Length: 493
Image (cartoon, rainbow, N blue to C red; front, side, top):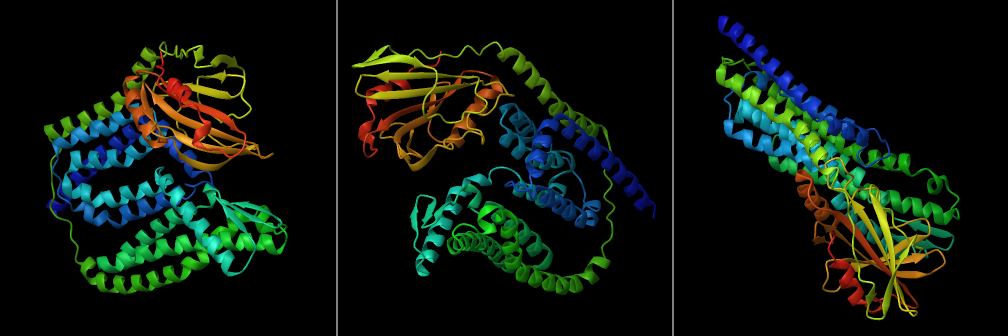
C-alpha cells in the first residue's frame, strides 16, 4: 500500500511536468494550433473531420491510461536532438510544415522525458492526428483520375452520350467538372481513420486488421465514384435541373458514404464484443507496477532543457523577421532586345493567374510585330511570416480561363499548360519557381526549398509565367526558347 502511495505521488509529479510541457508547446506554437483549428472548422473542407480525429486520439489515449500509469520511465537524453530539429521547423514559415511537425515534436518530447516504453504507447494516438493534417493533397490527382476513368466507363456501359476530356464530362444538356473536390479525398481520409480505429478496437490479429483497413479504404473510394456517377446521371435525366446538380453535393455524398460504410462498422462492433469478453478477465488482473522514478536533478534539467528549446523558437523567429524585413528590394533586369523581340512593360495581361501573398508583380512583353510573349513575375518574401510561394490559394484558372492540357517543358525545369478561354482562345503557358536562383518545377519541392531559405531569411523567391497565343493548335513549337531561356536564367537581384 505504501509503495502504491509513493507511486501515485510520483505519478502526480510526472503529470505536473507533462501538463507544463504541453502548455509551453501550445503557447509557443499557438499560431500553428490556431491554423490547424481553422482547417478543422471548415465543415465542407478537406479536413473538416479534424475534430473527430482529435476526439479519437484522446479516446485512444484514455484507453491506454492504465498501461501508461504502470509504465516505467527512463529519459532518453539524445532525443533532445529531434526535439530541437522539429522545433526549428517552425522557422520554415510554411504552415503545412509547422502543422506536420507538431505530433512528431510531442512524441520526441515524451521520448526525451519518459523513455521508449512510454513514447511507444502514446505514439499511435498522436500519430493518428496526421489523418487530420495537410499532406494528403498529394493523392488528389490520382483519386481524381480514377474517378474520371470509372465514371467514363459507367456512362459508356449505360450508353449515356457523354464526351469526357481531361476532368470534364460534357452531356447534351451541360458540362460537369470532376474537380479536385470531387476526388473523394475527404471520404478516403475519414475511411482510413475509421478503419484504423475499428480495426484496433475490434481485432487482435494483424491480418484481420489489415483486411479491415483495406476494406474501409476501398469502400470509401467506391462511395465517391458512386456519388459522382449518380449526380451526373441525375443531371442527364433532368436536363441539369436536379437539386443534386445545383447544391446537393455535400450532404448527398456523406449519405452515400455512410450507407456503404455501415455494414462494415456493424461487423466491427460485433467483433469488438467478442474481443471484449475474451479480454475482460485479463484486464481485471492488471495491477500498477511500483514504477517509481524520482523527480531528481537530471529530470528537472531535462524538463528545463525542453522548455528552453521550445520557447526559443518564437524568439528566434522574431529576431529573424527583424533582420530580413529590410531585404525586400527584389528585381529582375531583362534584356531590352532578344533577337528581333523588343521588351516593354505592361500594366496587366489578358490572362493572369492568382499569386496570393506576393509582395508585388511585374508585367512585361516581348514583341516582334508578329508574335507577342507575355511575362508575369510575382515576387515573394523569404521571412518566416511570409506567405508560401506555392500556397493553396494560388490559382492557375479563373472564370474566363481553364486548363485543358498539362505537361512539362522540353529540357527545362518548367511546367507547360494549354489554357482556353470561354470564347475558345488558347494560350501556351510555361511557369516555374525561382528560389534564390534554384529553379523548381514542382510546387511541393518549391515550398520545401523556400522553407530552408526562410529559416535563415536569405535570398529572394519568385514565380514566373511566360505565355503566347496559339493561332491554331498549341504545341511546343509556338514558344521561342531563346526568350524562355533568357527569362528563366536571368538572376534575381
